[in-house]
Image 1: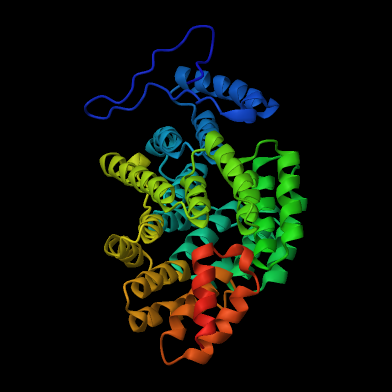
Image 2: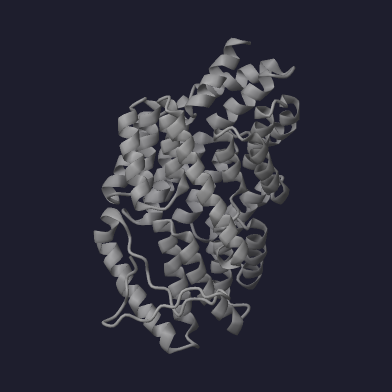
Length: 436
């Protein structure tokens, strides 16, 4: 249901045959416990004021930026990205039409491009914004994100150093943490993410998102007690937080508490639009031996992502590349030809990214070509990442080649922290290790 501002509902015009934009974009009602929060009440009040201001004054650039920022934040909180992307871009583009060098508009548009996985376009815009304001920390954060996704890791480190030197805060600490993780420094990544959480306001979405990342880091290092504690703190500070529920669901799955995992994933899925929750639920059913239900869920994910991609092709304001995600989904249902199609599409856009190379390597391995997989898994390991899933996949691949000793070492290391590894890969890794 949409929330209509003011005492009289405005007339909302949806897309016509020529995809004309809405007259305005009302905020969509949040779901679950978040719909009763004080934060949501405040957001609605702010949204009403901003919509009224921009509606009445076409030259009001400041409040257009404010409204676009609000839409972007709502997309993060609710997962309704396609709707809010179109809403935010409408007002960002109106600002840029009047001032093509407007710094805030450039940074917001770059942020949207990055969220839509248009990483090269986002980098270009972020660089343009940085040139006009080289002393702004936020723009260096965008440069970090774009360069990481494109596999320009050394440049990303330089950007993060500049960012933290200008403004040491939750945004800069969290990016330092991510880069340390990429380079295999889990203790350093945990320390930096702790600093990020401590720098934020308790209960804020950005803070609790950082806490979820901290919990994930603990999980990937095998510290399940600390991981669980962080997920629970996030739930306490932000009741009903979907990503905290999903984190606890993942831990329950690793502990083979399937009933609990199902309940938590379903609760997450009922409040936020994020395909990862259905994917997690599919993993639970697969682990239970209910492959029919697991594949049904994953086919729903594939259908949804494919439809979103089609909508994006028709309207660039909501376009979102999801080829890596689709490759993983097709891997789950064992359609390796389609998995390869999407993995290659992602690789052609960003051939230096370690995660993309890992995905492509795993697809080739599943298609029975371990030797071809080696060249890509080599790239995936180039930064020294210690991600347990990466280590297990690399170990399984090398174990099928002449590099068996390397495969054994990676498998042993990956399986030490097996809570973060899905059931099928875990069993495959154990079997490969026994054959050594």
